[in-house]
Every structure is written in structure tokens, then in C-alpha cells.
Amino acid sequence: MQIHSKLPNIGTTIFTVMSGLAKEHNAINLSQGFPDFECDPKLIELAQNHMKAGFNQYAPMQGALALREQISYLLQNCYSAIYNPDTEITVTAGATQGIYTCIAAFINKGDEVILFEPAYDCYTPAIELHGAIAKPINLEYPDFTINWETVKNTITDKTRMIIINTPHNPSGTTMSANDLMQLEKLVAGKNIIVVSDEVYEHMAFDEQPHQSVARFKGLASQSIIVSSFGKTIHATGWKIGYVAAPKELMLEFRKVHQFLVFAVNHPFQLALADYLKDESTYKGLHQFYQTKRDYFRKLISGSRFKIESCTGTYFQLLNYKAISEEADTDFAIRLTKEKGLASIPLSVFYTDKQQQHLLRFCFAKKEETLEKAAEIICKL
Image 1 (cartoon, rainbow, N blue to C red):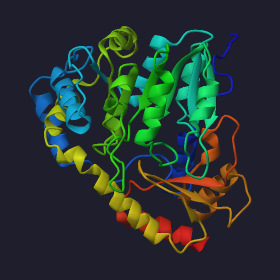
Image 2: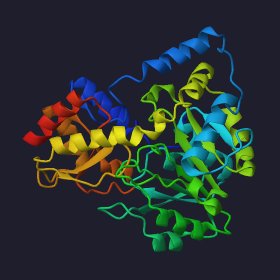
Image 3: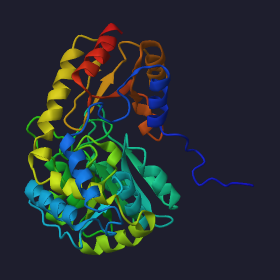
């Protein structure tokens, strides 16, 4: 059988590769973004209660109403934004499915989609699968800021979507209110949809609030917010996310969503709805991870790595130029095999595989894990 691949240049994701390498060499895994500590036992209990109560059949296509109502409250509580739980919120099987559905619902062959690199690796493949053209713009190192004049000059009459991500994976930086206002001005009156990947929305540090597009009324009117609970509740394997958008956009989103997954895990949705009633489960998360960030940075402060800025997410970039001139992929593999510490090379998040001698480390780990990792880092 002759197969004509729609993604001929795509292989196994770097996350799978590095986690597999870490397992093979019994290395400390700071590569893939997941905690090595357990989620709250109360969550497990809540899920079990709903299973025992018989909620083991399909949830509504748009998501369990109790969870949609809780998401609506969260958006109002955090960003003073009103989203109707019936018509403007949909529960998804994680954020990746939400992003893919946005692209599938609105992007056609020949359309152009602007995104910012380094970029999470699910954006471009989804764009290309739908016959559209990805137009990457590099964030400006070392602060990974957006040059809005470049964005303005990149927009054409074929531009149908702009994808943003804040707090930003993999750089660990955040967009400012001024950034969102600049974007709002650029897309106003244009037939452009903004997809805002806000998976790490509750992990903005140093007393700086997360700047959701939901805070900006004009921008929100032509934007789709995509977020996820996996990072918030320390249970990435639950794969439950949400999308919030104006009614007319959500109507088209759901047309595609129903044929991709139809419905998401029912008892876990209900468990989340109960759990999120306690606002501290998400409002205190930034301090929880800032403490981990600060502890990890303190442990490695005496190393030869340059510690880059980290204002959000649970990822820390380290520059190893003072240690080696190797390509980041080679250095990351050697660090895993020879030293027992797995990370993610930053070049894989660029279309042109740009080399900046940067590795991404996940600090969503127990203190003892961070201590063992720091010991290796400080010896290099």
C-alpha cells in the first residue's frame, strides 16, 4: 500500500523521545511537563463518588453543565469576564484537542496563521493538516518579547488566525497588558480570530496577574481562550480542558468538536466541578509554583548555567553556553545518558531549529527530585 503522509516531516514528539531516554537510562526526568507528586486525594474521592453514583455514561457534548458553570464563575472571578455556560463554554479532552478543533473549525486551505516561536509543537502540524500556511515570528531573545511592528507587517489579507500563548511554554515568560492592547488594536475590524493558549493561566509569578484575553473586551470578542485543568490540579492524565469564546465562534467550534471526541470523561468532569468550588485550588497555585521556582533557582545559583527569566509556567530555561558549544539536542541527549538528567532542547520549538544553547527544565517536582537534579547541574 502506498501511503502519502500528510505530515511527512513529523516524527515522534521530543517529549516522548526524552522521557523514553530518561526511562532507559534511569535519569531524573525534568523534561516532560508533569508533576512527580500526587494530586489532592480529595479529587480521587470526588471522582469515585460520582462513579459510584452512576455517572458513567456519556456527558453532554458541550460538557457537564456543573463544570461549565464553574468555569464561567472562574472566568468572572479571575478576569471579570462574562461567558455564558450554555453557549460560550465547551469542555474538551485537554487543551491540545481544543487548539486542534479551533484550527479545524476556522482555517481553510491557503489561509495564513501567525504564531510565535519557540512554539508548543501542536500548532504548526494542525495548521498544515488543514492546508493552511504557518507564519512563525520569533520571540526576541533574551526576554522572549513580541515585536508588534513585525506582527503588523506579517498580517496580510490571507491572515485568518493568530495564536498566542501566555504564560508561555517553553520560555516561561508572560505577556503584558500592553502586549494584549497592541494585539487588540492590530486585529480590530479584521477578519482574524485570536486563539489564546492559556493552559498555565494560574501560574503567573512575582505579583503580576495573568493577562488573559478575557480582560480585554474588544479582543475577547474575536478570541477563543483555550485552557486546561491538568496543570492546575496536578493531574495531567485526566486530560480535561475548556474553551471559552463568543457564541458565534463557539457554535462553529462545537460543530467540529462533536465529531472529534463528542464528550469528555463524565465522572471526572463532575469531580472537577466540585473541587473548583474551593477557590484556593486555583487562586493559590501561583504561589505554590513560585516557591518551587525560587527553590530550584537557589539550588542551581552556583552552577555554570545562566538562569533565564521565568515569570510563569513551571518551566525554567538554562543557558549552557559557558559549559559547551554543542547543539542543544546533542547536549540534552548527552546530559541524559551520561549524567542522568533529562531536559528539553529549545531548538525543537523552532521551525528553523534555532540554536541558543538553551535547555528547558520542569520544576513541577518534589523537593528531593529538584535537589538531586541540582546536584548534577552544579557539577557540570
